[in-house]
Image 1: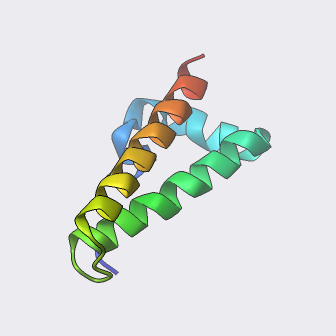
Image 2: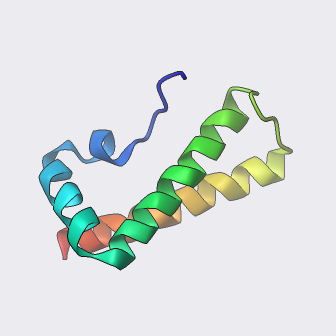
Length: 78
């Protein structure tokens, strides 16, 4: 498998320890984390034409990824 950009540990390296701790201790965070990575991988597959989708579907996936990333960042910095 190729390297998937936008992994949370790479997006927020200064918060890597907190991400790991919250994944283990906060079920809501863990669910959002898993959902983020599922959507992120779908975006990557669409961008690389492994699983092509229409332009609007790809935009929707990117928006969903951004929303999840914002929510996760908010939880990490609260």
